[in-house]
Length: 119
Image 1 (cartoon, rainbow, N blue to C red):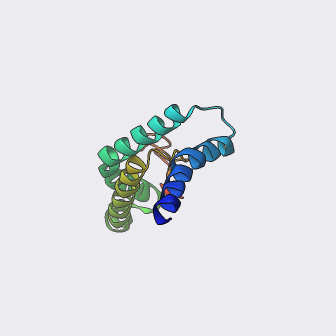
Image 2 (image 1 turned 45 degrees about the vertical axis):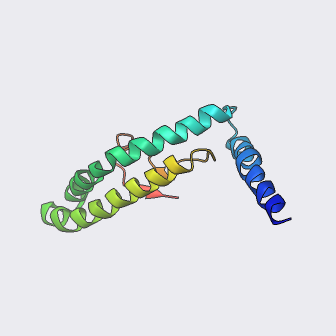
């Protein structure tokens, strides 16, 4: 009985949930395309996460001055580097459940002058 419940949960997670997520997007994107997009996004974010460090130093320096950018910008950059890398790895691992990208902007080079958000 226990294995039947576990199999039903896996069936729901890998067959029903992805279709529901795609339908909520409002975009007619196929499951393989959405899954591969999430996989590529995750891999790219893991590979380019370190770019968050200079990005945040530059952004903070432009907004608040060089001293603030080299201190608070550096700490913020380290945190965003870790965040983009970890969430990129999670997106790559869970690519079979295609959802919206966790990190915004999805790629580091998009909206380079905008601070990274998660959610």
